[in-house]
Length: 256
Figure 1 (tube, rainbow, N blue to C red):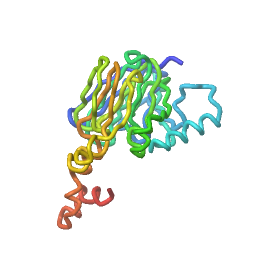
Figure 2 (figure 1 turned 90 degrees about the vertical axis):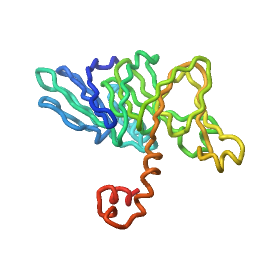
Figure 3 (figure 1 turned 135 degrees about the horizontal axis):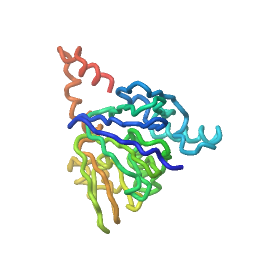
């Protein structure tokens, strides 16, 4: 199924949102709760599945939706369609501060692997599935870098990253990365998670017990501030019980 050919603009610097322009009859799919605003003519419908396989049966839809629960995402995907007679726009924002990365799936061999919370929205026709990294090292980490999402299609997809995005092209090279900093990568790369080295390095190095390792030829997108690092940086404020405890930030941190 060919994806809809949508136009877009990205607004903002540190906290971005993407505005997608739809011609009459065009549709964009998005994670539940990602929509910021939509213009007249746009209607939305919550569906179980991405709609990339029109003849998909109920059982297939249930299995697909169930696999999304494994990744921690919503059971449903929202479909936004332009039912009007002229161009109309709908905007989406990430759930935390960072950068939105547009990717034309035609430029990455029609397939992209994304961390389980990295997908934001995509042109209708994009197929979303869950893929497991079967490497032993990945499984030992207990989930981080183990459960991933796969985007397939020939249209535009949008992923979000915390902080600044670093785009690296590997040419038969190896790159070692903090496990939480991997946002997306081409399937041509071999992705594994390994221990950081000696016991001393693991205990006192401050880099955690594991590092992600990318090997081969392909493109990888990294984020400078994954959400877990942001929470860790803000955690000391949650210990205050003065005025901060009654603030919005204090209430947010209390729930972490």
